[in-house]
Length: 294
Ligand SMILES: [Zn+2]
Image 1 (cartoon, rainbow, N blue to C red):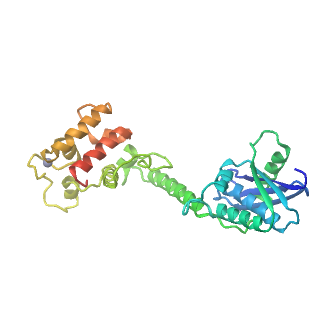
Image 2 (tube, protein in one colour):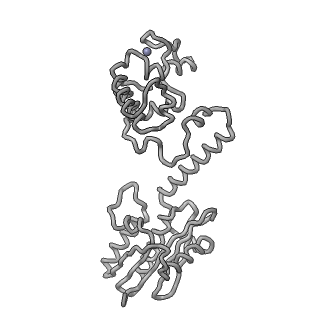
Image 3 (cartoon, protein in one colour):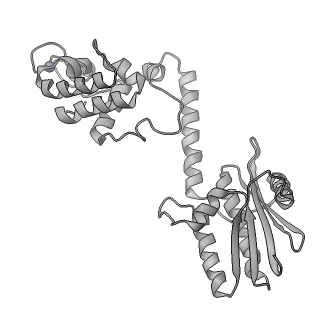
């Protein structure tokens, strides 16, 4: 570490605080720089912003060798990894850019990851400073990355949906909320490899507003709700389990459902409520094979 100027950086996000704090401890000079950013800033961004601030100090410094320590493994990985256009934070791009620039100025900067809360004294010190920065830090000049706004917006929408439902008891959307609504950050189909048609059809079934005649008749879009096969009302359950027009596709679906441990009698609602990936895959395959949009 001789002749190397050393920094410890940290970010801190505390619930119910208006700001997220981050700090840079310049160990060699025994100086702390404290910053804060609006509360929607993620902890990842705060940690990255702290490293960026350390690099700004490096830029103006006379020394040639620098070490920056952070307890954020994900930021170190993002800085060392390949950037993903469109999804990587612009702060990471700025860090990478600055590191390249500093090399051209003959400066060597090493970024190290250290585990948090392991009694490393400087890390403990900068952790305290980062926490205090939530209240007393200087407002950062860096903008909050798009990804943090997206997360904030998504959480707000989900929160508002829950509030809307609780205030709207018995009104529109009642069935959907009772049967299908789950408070999850990921969409139900994110981890599944379903076709777009299968996803939109299943979403329509979940919402109770489909293109089957039973649904269209309610809005007087069609004059009859009888199915073209002549065997009764064209409902979602009729299409999946009865309609003679889709027998071949159904045979395959039933094979898949049995493999998934689902046996007759079948009903679309409990199958969808289970949200079992193998069941959803079977239903999705039926929608594809039958070439229907529900
Ligand atoms: Zn039919």
